Amino acid sequence: MDRDDTTLRALSTSDLAGLDISLTDVVDTVEQAYRTLAAGQSDNPRKLTVRPPDGHSVSYAMLGRDGVRNVVAIKTSYKHGLHAGRDQQHYYTTLTLYDDITGLPVAMMDCSRIGALRTPAVSALLARECAAPDASTALVIGTGTQGRLALPFLLTTLPRLDRLLLSGTHPDGIAAARDELARCFPDRDLEVVGDLKAAARDADVIVATAGAHTPAAVEAGWLKPGAVTLLVGHGLAPSTLHQADRIIATSEAQMRVTGTDMADADGNLPAVDLELPAVISGESKVRTAAEQRVFAYNSGLVVTDIALGHRFAQLAAEQKLGTEVALWR
Figure 1 (cartoon, rainbow, N blue to C red):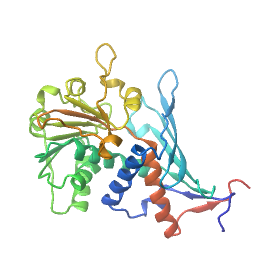
Figure 2 (cartoon, one colour; figure 1 turned 90 degrees about the vertical axis):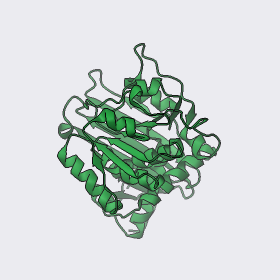
Figure 3 (cartoon, one colour; figure 1 turned 30 degrees about the vertical axis):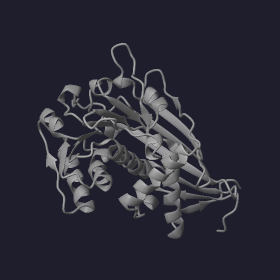
């Protein structure tokens, strides 16, 4: 079917699962999105959020524009069953892309794989920019999707890491994390740790990806000088934020919306020193001293979803994947 202004390429979960993309390609694509945003060439408005009074679901809508790729997109996200276990929850997320040169739709896709890759890539960029020069030990808390991908992405941006620690309680998740690391870096292995406090004291970089019900909570007093604590999900106590010497966020505005569980007893969050786009661009440096303890907050910016989604759409088009839908006829 010829492409026109009435058709849309729909890319399913299985279409995207069949696309091969390297960790370096993902990191480079996400990094370019931050550089473009820092240069003022992209737009990333604050996300819209709605949830019912009882909190059983949450929905997001995010609109953005990539000024280098000349792509406009909207991402939607809906999660239902927040009071239930993970296996009983329903989660749907989509990304719809439009070419802002031709005015034609590019694709609509399931955004779950995009987000699953974008988030650990952002964590890896944060770790690269925040880590002390001699950082050698990384600790990942949690063995869900983000926990399994965290170490391979960290090694992509911090190849000097020589000790890889994993804190988790689910045997299947631990096995999956080990398998993912072996697939990407067959010469590396991880250490599963039982004593979280001792592991945190050894770690130069700590990435917390655990679920909301985790008992894990690294305290600021456990950290060595120069350590980085990086929050993606859960696993860090609020003290790691409030007692940090430097605070970095992908977006301070988003941290104030989604990071309320890290607030102090009065419901307050401290000010952010820097946002990641300014750091990536070279405009600012994270550290003013090597021994500073840094807290980094990873929340998604839609411009990174747009860039990575567009990259996937390009790869899918090259392989003629997806279904052309006459949506507007």
